[in-house]
Amino acid sequence: MKQIILTPNAPSPIGAYSQAVKHNGILYISGQIAIDPSTNKLVFDGIKKETTLIMENISNILREAGMTYENVLFTTILLKDINDFERVNDIYSKYFNPDTAPARAAYQVATLPKNVNIEITMIAGE
Image (tube, rainbow, N blue to C red):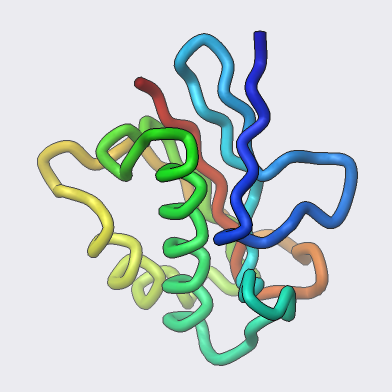
């Protein structure tokens, strides 16, 4: 049976989806954009700040599910501009042990929800 994961320490869903769903020990985290959960407002303060906010929000979702970044198996990073990849990777890398880092894909896309610069989704396992 699936378990819906919801924490006030990450942005509230703005549609027909959950922050995350846990099923059979696997956690599926919905795509996160740079929304400050305390104000529910988008943050457009540069790609490094946006990435940090997303990673902190995901950290809170993982914690709510009883997990940490060590549990992350796969990450997808969607970027408005692939030229931001190096700056995103600088921030992203701080959250993982290089010896146990998850598999990852990163793509430039034509557009993202609310015209944001970055969206990150993850899959984690117990």
